[in-house]
Image 1 (tube, rainbow, N blue to C red):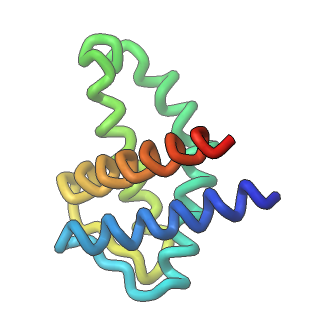
Image 2: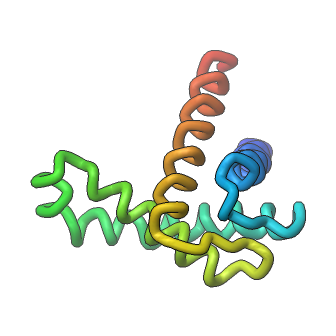
Length: 115
């Protein structure tokens, strides 16, 4: 349970940082960022594996780059669900997903060094 809360807070911080770095992404409050991080985690756990499997041929042909499109789609879905979290278009969603992934890579690599 403790690890879940830490990951949730790191994801929330990543969403706030990404919204700060990408001018068109809007997060209205800390509550909106917390909710977006929770919904993003749930959608990533439930929908993303299904989308990866369904688009496997395209993903193989593009050498995995189609995963960026899937990430952007997931970010757009979350922005439609969560009030106070807005990503206006496809390219900001792609950039948001990239920034979020980079921040999560750094946070998880530092977490694995601690253990």
